Length: 131
Image (cartoon, rainbow, N blue to C red; front, side, top):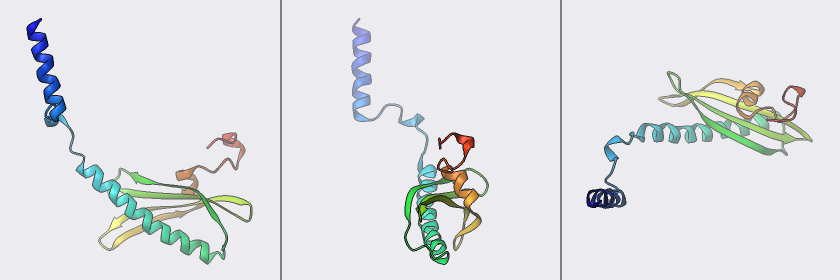
């Protein structure tokens, strides 16, 4: 009984001080860098998206959903998708890109990319209104 109590007390003390199991924790610095880069990719795509709606002469619109992230590939692919509404119509647009020395380069863009990333907003019968 004393041995179990002492073991429990030691494990509790180590847990409270943050010393237990640190050696077995994965290094998340790489994941953090990738996530941070995905935020930069989103900023880049935001500027492209604003330019696209301007080019299409869409002055009044609302962004209903924005999704972003990355696909583990070599090189990593960053994705950003938008579901937006204008003139009572909901549609999507998205970007697939990879990082370059200068910033980002778009690999693919368009409505289909946006649908892949955000879903199509229930605009067809295939998904029964579910996204």
